[in-house]
Length: 566
Figure 1 (tube, one colour):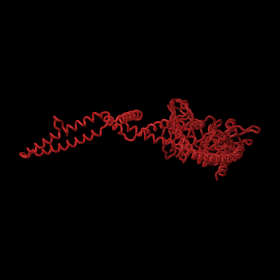
Figure 2: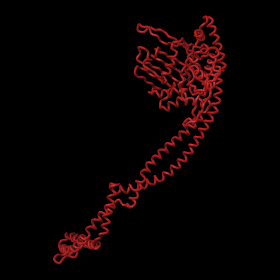
Figure 3: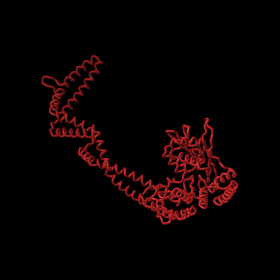
Figure 4: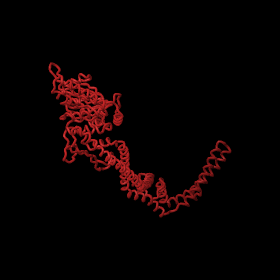
């Protein structure tokens, strides 16, 4: 609910602050007094079009501030926008200058799209020729759902639908990933088979093969040198004793010397140990020489295997350990790719079941909407009859559409205001006055089911009088029981029923030696002030007659208000 509106330097308004209450709030005043400027400011602060020309002449900027009382819906919206709540509720401020304009919600800068989204939560302005929201099929659908109290069921469907869409998106991503992997499957299989044939399991195999190749390539030389070394160490030659013979002789000499000098005994022990090690080395060299054989076939295999490993390293390396790791990864990836098809088939079956469930819930929504449409058609025609539209035909067209978060229906409002004329889309054929009265009747049908808390009507009673004007007034009073209603009117019958009455007028002030016109608003709290304002609206009577008639209107309004709101 709108609780406060402050306007500074906007059009003819220099500085204006208004407090609003619940129920029916009426603004009256002479034509051109500035009533519509106030509604324009309310439109602008919630995202309406604006230009620098709307800034009051001589001012640098205009500021419009609207405060709305707290509610659960607004708290949820603020939380979704990550904007802090305020104790007073919601404060929207829009600043307008010649080149730029800024908007803030609870002190946070927001763009036009956010403002327009917020507007749909807070307020609806209905004026002659203005039916922007009702032109949208989704708005007509929501109105029907609100009327039929289908919104909770639609919310349950929305949750199912959004879960379904998420599952579809996840499955689509998995399929795309699978397709990408399948494109690599042949390559993976080729690589896997190549590495499988290579039978790799030892990352040090290449180093071992290099050692084997060196040994095999020099087998003859190794045999010859082994024999020669054995002779040098152990057997000796005709003209040269073996190393073991020399060590043995040296050891005996040190033992003899140790008999005379005990400090030489350790040296003798060292030679003895050396003799033992040389003897062991000689025997080991002899055994090695006996095992070394020239093997051309094994050498050829070793060379071939080394070439194979080098080729694999160049493809999948750089090291043999990297090649083995790649092989193991291929094995794992191939298992995942070949197994993913079965997993996706299970998910596809589950998704098909969820789709059927969503389709069934959408069909239930369609049936509920069809039933609600029939009731709305009858109720709306009855509400329009006293508004001077007794011959109206109205129908709600429900057509199938692609499954969406609101169901599988497209709703359209059709009507024929004159007998003999076919049903046509409402927003294409209704005049401004007809549309205003239609919306008034529609809001009366919705009652407390309408999620919009504040309804603004700008001179919707233009061109009606007598019985129709009284019906319009009673509809506005009825709406005031479930909504906050702001109404600009010239009808005394409407103004008399107001819970809060504001008189708008122009004043001329002296500013810097010049006369300037400004808009002023007076809250008419006292019965006498209201009676005088109603007398001005009545016109065409003597002052005395007008005042008496205005007093009678107020007395009758009290009775009607008590009847509507016991």
